[in-house]
Length: 235
Image (cartoon, rainbow, N blue to C red; front, side, top):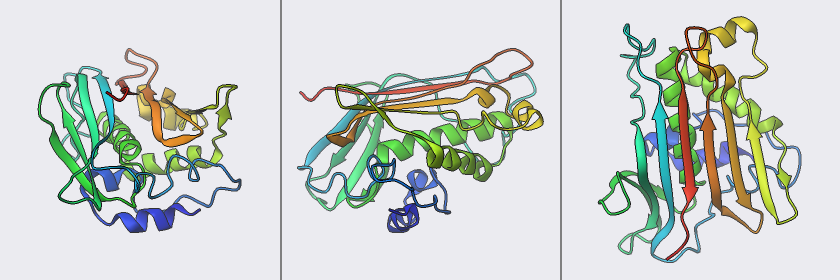
């Protein structure tokens, strides 16, 4: 399955479409790869109206240095810090052919609409998470979002899924680990970025956990980012 076709169906629907950028990932060389599972289009086509998925979101960022972030003022907003926020994917009764992604500061507050996508789009939650990582890295390091997305693409292409005995698939990416010393120095704490995902093989649309963490601190590794999405049980 080619992600070029997937992204082509998405059009230009706000920040979600920015998550992987306009270029395509190469074809995955083995069946059951990332694109065949958690990124396949139409994962929620059969979902009933109303709430489809709900995630608890925790996000923290390093404090800005006195001189400001290198990428500040370049037209990309740094994601806001969140504690116990609710990210909800839903299908509106009035527009059953579309999916809506909303974010609320907590589970009881009304959510603001982040984007609306056709039901055939890839996983909006996954794309939202990836885009936040790219935005944070771009603002804090001054790096090009296109460059950062390309490195994440390459890591996804090379990734191996490790299912356990319970049928849970585990995916871990360190997209900047192979960069040279000069490039890693420019990325600061993001040079040690680690991305982790878990999902049940039988339900790839219900990603159980998405976690992004940077490592390092101090002057040698300025910046830092943590974002953790945990799927909430159905009520």
